[in-house]
Image 1 (tube, rainbow, N blue to C red):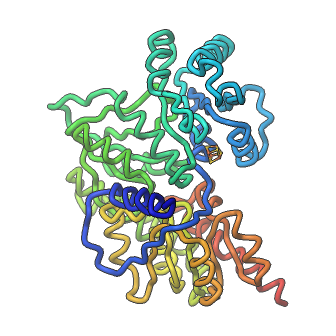
Image 2 (cartoon, protein in one colour):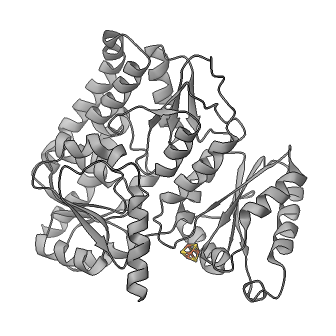
Length: 436
Ligand code: SF4
C-alpha cells in the first residue's frame, strides 16, 4: 500500500542519517503526514552567503511562488536566484526539456557575466519527469568553464525538510574543493552557512588562539573554495549537514566532536574542541574565550527570569531542535517537554543528547495529528513549530515560535546568545501582555 511505501522510504532515510550509535534514551519514531518547507527554502540564505553564485531552480510555478514568498521582498536589480518554470509541454514530454534548459542557461549567463558559480536546483516536477540535472550541469559546464562552474543539487520537497537544501548544496561543492596536500599542516574548516558577522567573530577568536589556517564552507565567494584532505579537521556549525560531513570524510577530513556553538556552553565547547584538535595551550584558549563567555553569561542572566521553569515543545522542523533545546534547558532553566526533530543524527548529536534530562520526550520524524494531540495534552508554555501550524495553535491559546526564524537569525556564538534567548522570551512576554 501507499502507506507501506511511505514507511519504507522513511525507514531508509532514518538509516541514512549517519553511523549508528546506540541511543541512550528511547526515541519515539513518527512516520506520517509532515508539515515542513522543502529544500528550495535554503536558497534564501545561501544566495546571500555566496555572493558570486546564482541558483536556478528548475521547477514549477509553485516552486517560484514558494521562493518569492519565503524571500519576502524580491525587488532586486540583479537577483541571484530564479526559477526556470516548466510548462505543461515540458511535463508532457512534448519538448526536449534539456534543450530548453540549455537555452535558458545560455541566455542567463550571457546577460549576467558576474555569475561565477551556477547551481541548477532540482525540484519535485523536475524529478517527476526525471530531468537529469547532473547531466545538464556536466554538458553546460563543458561549454562555460572556466568562466562559470555549473553544479547541481536537489531541493525537492519529497521526503526532505528545508535545511536539507543547504546540506545538498554544500555536498555538491565538496567534490570541487581543491585538494589539501598530504604533507600540508593541519587546517581547520568551519562547515555550515553563518551570517558574515558571526563568521568574522569566530575567525577572530581562532586567530587569537593561534589557529592560522581556517576555511569556511560555504565560502563567501563560491569560487574561493577552501582545500580539503586528510589534514582537514572540520567543525560543524549546523546540525543538519549529514551528507556534507560524509562527503568531506570521503575526502579524508576528520570531524571535531563538539557541542554546537549555541549559548555560552555550546560556543565554549566548540572553540575548546578546536583548540584541543590543534594542540593549542588550554590556558590560551580559556584566555581568548573568557571575555565572550562573560559577556554572554551576563546578557543571559537578564533573560533567565523570563524563561526559567517555562515548558517548551519543539515540533520537528529545522533540525536545529536538539542543540537549541540543550541551550534552553542548561542555560536558561527551561523544561523540555518534547523535542521533535525530522532526523536524528545520533553521531553528530551524541554530546547534545547526553545533556538532556531523563524526562525529555525525544521524537524523530513527523506524524502531524499525533504530535498535535500531544501538544494539546501537554499544553507547553511555548511550542516551536512551522509557519503553517503556528496560527491554528495560537487560535487554541498556545504560544508559538516560528522555527524558520531561528534559521534566518544570527544565533551562533557568544555575542548572539542573548538574541537567541530573546527569540523565545518575546512570544512569552507577548502572551503575558495579552493575558493582562
Ligand atoms: Fe513544492 Fe516540490 Fe517545488 Fe518545493 S520543490 S515548492 S515541495 S513543488
